[in-house]
Image (cartoon, rainbow, N blue to C red; front, side):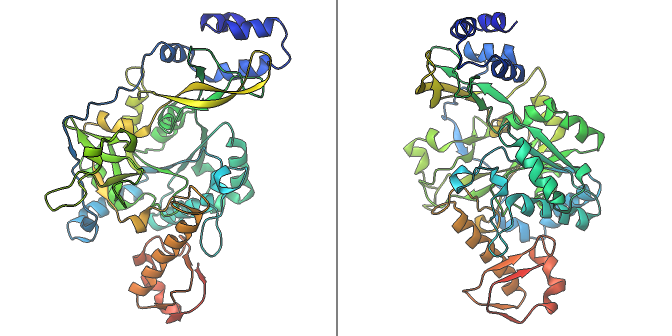
Length: 453
């Protein structure tokens, strides 16, 4: 019985509203919300268990990083070849986190539908799907794509893929799964009523990706298909090099459980977490947790000491995810105080101070027995679309995409006007070397915007 379940959780204020027939409270919505959550976990979180404990940051130093220059060295060859071999054998899956809405980009729809490419305006979903399709063609084996949605955008995301015929991918190789949700609570531990008459629920964080893989049967699918490695990325980065063979090979051959790509911070004050070694373990230290001494520290040559910015691109072993989501292990929950839109006891809209619980995927790093950190050139692989203009915006991302593709053409001897926008389809080339065989079919000089497909 709903009332009894709520009483066991100490939520008598909602029981009273249900029993008095308050019109602004929906029994069906509350039942639906509670059905989604792990009740024992909620009780534990409310009682202060499974919460993240901030490390002291006493014994901290830069994490060992494989430099970006390694990618063009002869030593990189065997690692890249091994990554390519894993792709040919069907051992790698791509996983995109796509639960967000594009409200900051001016649309009431999944962020993945935002048009981002500089000439054709392809959506993020199309761009990522075409990269996966190109990989599948290049290595002769389907790379399954797992798409994590949210309760808000799951139906719209599935519909978008279906309406566009999965952008050429076989629907049997695309798997949608929904991120978990948790009820927010007031500072004194009471559930918050939302404007739709149910509970105010918040996504359980990008760390919830791992638990959602298990809950939705995706780990079983991966195991059945022989998937050993998962390439994890976020939907808003159109420059991501999905299933980069060098990264796969480095991670796998060195026996890593979870690995990361990093980019050099643009400044000491760039608000991005860095990867460091804390008490002998690799972990992400968030910008807000860094002291000034750490943030502005210099190395022996007078350069930024903690420069390895987290790009939210990871390789994760499937069996490591299985361990992390077993009953014996779990990612810690972060407790964050936020302003929450709610209904008061009379059904009036109010904004209250409340608590949201969420997990971060990078908290799995210190749990990994072995981890590899690879530096990549920022302008080549990191151009997130978070705002319409300014830093990390649609504007800057389109420019970076065009500049990267221009550089490929120029390196291959094509003269390109500085005023031109260039877009190269992933189906034409995933990297510069893929374009080399086609360069003779291109004009020697490009003076206008061009889409190469």
